[in-house]
Image (cartoon, rainbow, N blue to C red):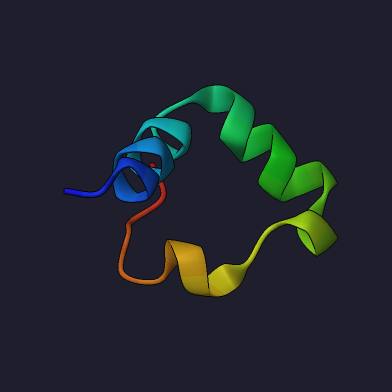
Length: 39
C-alpha cells in the first residue's frame, strides 16, 4: 500500500474528513471516495 493510499484511508476514517466533505466540497474529489462507503 502506498503512503498516499494509507493517508487517504486514515483521513477517511476521521470525523474531520466528514466535516471537510460537508463544508468544503470544492476541495474534495468525489473520485477519491468512490467505492468507499461513508459511515
